[in-house]
Length: 296
Image (cartoon, rainbow, N blue to C red; front, side, top):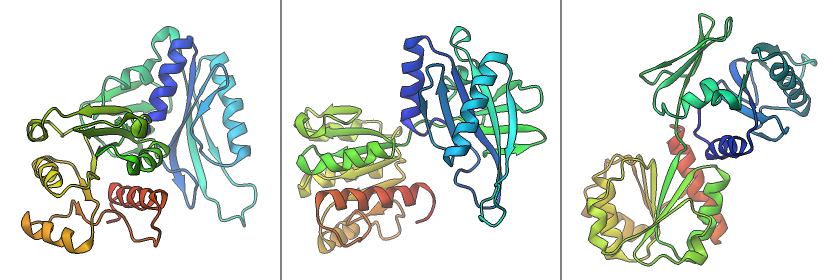
Protein backbone atom coordinates (compact mmCIF):
# COMPACT_ATOMS: atom_id res chain seq x y z
CA UNK A 1 0.00 0.00 0.00
CA UNK A 2 2.89 2.37 0.73
CA UNK A 3 5.55 0.63 -1.36
CA UNK A 4 6.09 3.99 -3.11
CA UNK A 5 7.89 6.37 -0.72
CA UNK A 6 6.43 9.39 -2.51
CA UNK A 7 3.01 8.52 -1.06
CA UNK A 8 4.40 8.79 2.46
CA UNK A 9 6.00 12.15 1.65
CA UNK A 10 2.71 13.35 0.17
CA UNK A 11 0.73 12.34 3.26
CA UNK A 12 3.24 14.03 5.57
CA UNK A 13 3.28 17.20 3.45
CA UNK A 14 -0.54 17.31 3.46
CA UNK A 15 -0.53 16.75 7.22
CA UNK A 16 1.84 19.66 7.79
CA UNK A 17 -0.46 21.89 5.74
CA UNK A 18 -3.59 20.66 7.55
CA UNK A 19 -5.15 19.35 4.33
CA UNK A 20 -7.72 16.61 3.82
CA UNK A 21 -6.93 13.75 1.43
CA UNK A 22 -8.94 11.67 -1.01
CA UNK A 23 -7.67 8.20 -1.88
CA UNK A 24 -8.76 6.41 -5.06
CA UNK A 25 -7.78 2.73 -5.19
CA UNK A 26 -8.15 0.23 -8.00
CA UNK A 27 -10.07 -2.62 -6.38
CA UNK A 28 -10.67 -4.95 -9.33
CA UNK A 29 -9.82 -5.24 -13.02
CA UNK A 30 -11.07 -7.29 -15.94
CA UNK A 31 -9.03 -7.52 -19.12
CA UNK A 32 -6.07 -5.32 -20.06
CA UNK A 33 -5.78 -2.25 -17.82
CA UNK A 34 -3.10 0.38 -17.17
CA UNK A 35 -3.37 0.00 -13.39
CA UNK A 36 -3.89 -3.17 -11.39
CA UNK A 37 -5.72 -3.87 -8.14
CA UNK A 38 -3.98 -2.07 -5.29
CA UNK A 39 -2.71 0.88 -7.34
CA UNK A 40 -3.69 4.18 -5.79
CA UNK A 41 -3.82 7.93 -6.32
CA UNK A 42 -3.97 10.45 -3.47
CA UNK A 43 -5.41 13.95 -3.92
CA UNK A 44 -5.40 16.59 -1.20
CA UNK A 45 -7.78 19.50 -0.70
CA UNK A 46 -5.28 21.80 -2.45
CA UNK A 47 -5.81 19.63 -5.56
CA UNK A 48 -2.22 18.36 -5.39
CA UNK A 49 -1.89 14.68 -6.20
CA UNK A 50 0.48 11.72 -6.27
CA UNK A 51 -0.01 8.66 -8.47
CA UNK A 52 -1.33 7.84 -11.96
CA UNK A 53 -4.14 5.38 -12.65
CA UNK A 54 -4.77 5.85 -16.35
CA UNK A 55 -5.93 8.23 -19.05
CA UNK A 56 -6.53 11.99 -18.66
CA UNK A 57 -10.30 11.42 -18.85
CA UNK A 58 -10.14 8.86 -16.02
CA UNK A 59 -7.94 11.22 -14.00
CA UNK A 60 -10.49 14.02 -14.45
CA UNK A 61 -13.31 11.69 -13.43
CA UNK A 62 -11.46 10.69 -10.25
CA UNK A 63 -10.75 14.36 -9.53
CA UNK A 64 -14.46 15.18 -9.82
CA UNK A 65 -15.45 12.27 -7.59
CA UNK A 66 -12.76 13.35 -5.14
CA UNK A 67 -14.34 16.77 -4.71
CA UNK A 68 -17.71 15.10 -4.30
CA UNK A 69 -16.64 12.76 -1.49
CA UNK A 70 -14.87 15.57 0.38
CA UNK A 71 -18.10 17.56 0.39
CA UNK A 72 -20.43 14.66 1.17
CA UNK A 73 -17.94 13.04 3.60
CA UNK A 74 -19.07 9.70 2.17
CA UNK A 75 -17.12 7.18 0.13
CA UNK A 76 -18.17 5.77 -3.22
CA UNK A 77 -17.11 3.14 -5.71
CA UNK A 78 -17.54 3.10 -9.47
CA UNK A 79 -16.76 1.07 -12.55
CA UNK A 80 -14.87 2.50 -15.49
CA UNK A 81 -15.72 0.96 -18.88
CA UNK A 82 -13.94 2.03 -22.08
CA UNK A 83 -16.15 4.00 -24.48
CA UNK A 84 -14.54 2.37 -27.51
CA UNK A 85 -15.06 -1.38 -27.24
CA UNK A 86 -12.43 -1.92 -29.94
CA UNK A 87 -9.72 -0.19 -27.91
CA UNK A 88 -8.65 -3.38 -26.18
CA UNK A 89 -8.88 -1.68 -22.77
CA UNK A 90 -10.43 -3.60 -19.93
CA UNK A 91 -12.79 -2.68 -17.10
CA UNK A 92 -11.65 -1.30 -13.73
CA UNK A 93 -13.46 -0.74 -10.46
CA UNK A 94 -12.41 1.96 -8.02
CA UNK A 95 -12.98 2.81 -4.37
CA UNK A 96 -12.80 6.52 -3.54
CA UNK A 97 -12.63 7.58 0.11
CA UNK A 98 -12.12 10.83 1.99
CA UNK A 99 -9.55 10.94 4.79
CA UNK A 100 -9.80 13.98 7.01
CA UNK A 101 -6.94 15.81 8.70
CA UNK A 102 -9.08 16.42 11.81
CA UNK A 103 -9.55 12.63 12.14
CA UNK A 104 -5.84 11.85 11.66
CA UNK A 105 -6.76 10.53 8.20
CA UNK A 106 -8.84 7.64 9.51
CA UNK A 107 -8.03 4.27 7.91
CA UNK A 108 -5.18 5.85 5.94
CA UNK A 109 -3.54 7.21 9.10
CA UNK A 110 -4.04 4.00 11.04
CA UNK A 111 -2.47 2.01 8.20
CA UNK A 112 0.75 3.99 8.58
CA UNK A 113 1.24 2.35 11.98
CA UNK A 114 0.44 -1.16 10.79
CA UNK A 115 3.07 -2.01 8.19
CA UNK A 116 3.04 -5.70 7.25
CA UNK A 117 -0.62 -6.15 8.12
CA UNK A 118 -3.71 -5.88 5.90
CA UNK A 119 -6.28 -3.12 5.55
CA UNK A 120 -9.74 -4.56 4.88
CA UNK A 121 -12.43 -2.11 3.70
CA UNK A 122 -16.11 -2.71 2.98
CA UNK A 123 -17.33 -1.16 -0.29
CA UNK A 124 -20.92 -1.21 1.01
CA UNK A 125 -20.81 0.60 4.34
CA UNK A 126 -17.13 1.67 4.05
CA UNK A 127 -16.17 0.32 7.45
CA UNK A 128 -12.62 -0.97 7.83
CA UNK A 129 -10.46 -3.19 9.99
CA UNK A 130 -6.77 -4.03 10.34
CA UNK A 131 -5.99 -7.74 10.01
CA UNK A 132 -2.83 -8.96 11.78
CA UNK A 133 -1.44 -10.80 8.78
CA UNK A 134 -0.49 -10.15 5.20
CA UNK A 135 -3.29 -11.01 2.74
CA UNK A 136 -3.04 -10.72 -1.02
CA UNK A 137 -4.68 -7.71 -2.64
CA UNK A 138 -8.20 -8.74 -3.67
CA UNK A 139 -11.90 -7.85 -3.71
CA UNK A 140 -13.89 -10.60 -2.04
CA UNK A 141 -17.42 -10.63 -0.61
CA UNK A 142 -17.73 -6.86 -1.00
CA UNK A 143 -14.51 -6.26 0.95
CA UNK A 144 -11.24 -4.95 -0.47
CA UNK A 145 -8.09 -6.40 1.07
CA UNK A 146 -4.80 -4.58 0.68
CA UNK A 147 -1.44 -5.43 2.24
CA UNK A 148 0.11 -2.45 4.02
CA UNK A 149 3.63 -2.44 2.63
CA UNK A 150 6.58 -0.21 3.40
CA UNK A 151 8.62 1.39 0.60
CA UNK A 152 10.96 -0.97 -1.23
CA UNK A 153 14.43 -0.45 0.26
CA UNK A 154 17.78 -0.42 -1.56
CA UNK A 155 21.11 -0.52 0.29
CA UNK A 156 24.11 0.76 -1.70
CA UNK A 157 27.68 0.04 -0.59
CA UNK A 158 29.99 2.79 -1.85
CA UNK A 159 29.64 6.53 -2.33
CA UNK A 160 31.76 7.44 -5.34
CA UNK A 161 30.61 9.45 -8.34
CA UNK A 162 29.45 6.26 -10.08
CA UNK A 163 26.73 5.87 -7.42
CA UNK A 164 24.91 9.14 -8.23
CA UNK A 165 23.00 7.79 -11.23
CA UNK A 166 21.92 4.66 -9.34
CA UNK A 167 20.48 6.79 -6.54
CA UNK A 168 18.65 8.99 -9.06
CA UNK A 169 17.21 5.96 -10.85
CA UNK A 170 16.17 4.30 -7.58
CA UNK A 171 14.52 7.54 -6.46
CA UNK A 172 12.62 7.61 -9.75
CA UNK A 173 11.38 4.13 -8.86
CA UNK A 174 10.34 5.61 -5.47
CA UNK A 175 12.52 3.17 -3.52
CA UNK A 176 14.02 4.17 -0.20
CA UNK A 177 17.77 4.54 -0.72
CA UNK A 178 20.51 4.08 1.87
CA UNK A 179 24.22 4.55 1.19
CA UNK A 180 26.83 2.98 3.45
CA UNK A 181 30.59 3.55 3.28
CA UNK A 182 33.65 4.14 5.42
CA UNK A 183 34.10 7.59 3.91
CA UNK A 184 30.86 9.19 2.73
CA UNK A 185 31.37 11.46 -0.28
CA UNK A 186 28.23 13.51 0.27
CA UNK A 187 28.50 15.52 -2.94
CA UNK A 188 27.79 12.31 -4.89
CA UNK A 189 25.10 10.81 -2.67
CA UNK A 190 23.16 13.77 -1.29
CA UNK A 191 19.93 12.56 -2.96
CA UNK A 192 19.92 9.35 -0.90
CA UNK A 193 17.36 9.06 1.88
CA UNK A 194 19.87 7.78 4.43
CA UNK A 195 23.66 7.83 4.85
CA UNK A 196 25.55 5.44 7.14
CA UNK A 197 29.23 5.95 7.90
CA UNK A 198 31.17 2.93 9.09
CA UNK A 199 33.90 3.62 11.62
CA UNK A 200 35.46 0.23 10.85
CA UNK A 201 34.79 -2.09 7.93
CA UNK A 202 34.09 -5.08 10.19
CA UNK A 203 31.30 -3.16 11.91
CA UNK A 204 29.03 -4.12 9.04
CA UNK A 205 29.10 -7.73 10.25
CA UNK A 206 27.13 -6.73 13.35
CA UNK A 207 24.57 -4.59 11.53
CA UNK A 208 20.96 -5.73 11.26
CA UNK A 209 20.25 -5.62 7.52
CA UNK A 210 16.80 -7.22 7.73
CA UNK A 211 14.97 -3.99 6.81
CA UNK A 212 16.48 -3.87 3.32
CA UNK A 213 15.02 -5.61 0.29
CA UNK A 214 17.96 -5.27 -2.10
CA UNK A 215 21.65 -4.43 -1.86
CA UNK A 216 24.27 -3.47 -4.43
CA UNK A 217 28.00 -3.53 -3.71
CA UNK A 218 29.78 -0.78 -5.67
CA UNK A 219 32.86 -0.28 -3.52
CA UNK A 220 35.41 -1.32 -6.21
CA UNK A 221 37.65 -3.03 -3.63
CA UNK A 222 37.86 -6.87 -3.52
CA UNK A 223 38.57 -7.19 0.22
CA UNK A 224 35.87 -4.68 1.09
CA UNK A 225 33.45 -6.42 -1.27
CA UNK A 226 34.03 -9.73 0.51
CA UNK A 227 33.23 -8.27 3.92
CA UNK A 228 30.05 -6.63 2.64
CA UNK A 229 29.03 -9.84 0.88
CA UNK A 230 29.61 -11.86 4.04
CA UNK A 231 27.28 -9.54 5.96
CA UNK A 232 24.60 -9.69 3.25
CA UNK A 233 24.68 -13.47 2.95
CA UNK A 234 23.92 -13.65 6.66
CA UNK A 235 20.80 -11.51 6.15
CA UNK A 236 17.44 -12.03 4.44
CA UNK A 237 18.10 -9.42 1.72
CA UNK A 238 16.39 -10.85 -1.38
CA UNK A 239 18.70 -9.35 -4.02
CA UNK A 240 22.49 -9.06 -3.73
CA UNK A 241 24.36 -7.50 -6.65
CA UNK A 242 28.08 -6.83 -7.08
CA UNK A 243 29.78 -4.74 -9.74
CA UNK A 244 32.76 -6.48 -11.35
CA UNK A 245 33.97 -8.47 -14.33
CA UNK A 246 32.60 -11.92 -15.11
CA UNK A 247 35.80 -13.80 -14.28
CA UNK A 248 36.19 -12.28 -10.81
CA UNK A 249 32.49 -12.63 -10.07
CA UNK A 250 32.62 -16.34 -10.93
CA UNK A 251 35.57 -16.73 -8.54
CA UNK A 252 33.54 -15.02 -5.84
CA UNK A 253 30.61 -17.31 -6.55
CA UNK A 254 32.87 -20.32 -5.97
CA UNK A 255 34.64 -18.74 -2.98
CA UNK A 256 31.35 -18.23 -1.13
CA UNK A 257 29.65 -21.36 -2.53
CA UNK A 258 26.93 -19.36 -4.25
CA UNK A 259 26.31 -21.61 -7.24
CA UNK A 260 22.70 -22.19 -6.19
CA UNK A 261 22.02 -18.91 -4.39
CA UNK A 262 19.16 -17.21 -6.27
CA UNK A 263 19.84 -13.90 -4.51
CA UNK A 264 23.31 -13.43 -5.98
CA UNK A 265 23.64 -11.34 -9.16
CA UNK A 266 27.17 -10.73 -10.37
CA UNK A 267 28.11 -8.97 -12.50
CA UNK A 268 25.18 -6.86 -11.37
CA UNK A 269 22.52 -5.70 -13.83
CA UNK A 270 21.06 -6.89 -17.13
CA UNK A 271 23.22 -6.77 -20.22
CA UNK A 272 21.55 -3.96 -22.16
CA UNK A 273 24.64 -3.04 -24.17
CA UNK A 274 25.37 0.32 -22.54
CA UNK A 275 28.51 1.36 -20.71
CA UNK A 276 27.70 4.82 -19.30
CA UNK A 277 26.98 5.23 -15.60
CA UNK A 278 23.37 6.06 -16.50
CA UNK A 279 22.87 2.86 -18.53
CA UNK A 280 24.55 0.80 -15.81
CA UNK A 281 22.14 2.31 -13.24
CA UNK A 282 19.22 1.50 -15.54
CA UNK A 283 20.41 -2.10 -15.98
CA UNK A 284 20.77 -2.56 -12.21
CA UNK A 285 17.36 -1.11 -11.36
CA UNK A 286 15.70 -3.12 -14.13
CA UNK A 287 17.19 -6.32 -12.72
CA UNK A 288 16.15 -5.43 -9.16
CA UNK A 289 12.61 -4.63 -10.35
CA UNK A 290 12.44 -7.95 -12.19
CA UNK A 291 13.56 -9.79 -9.04
CA UNK A 292 11.12 -7.78 -6.95
CA UNK A 293 8.25 -8.83 -9.21
CA UNK A 294 9.27 -12.49 -9.36
CA UNK A 295 10.34 -12.39 -13.02
CA UNK A 296 13.85 -13.75 -12.34
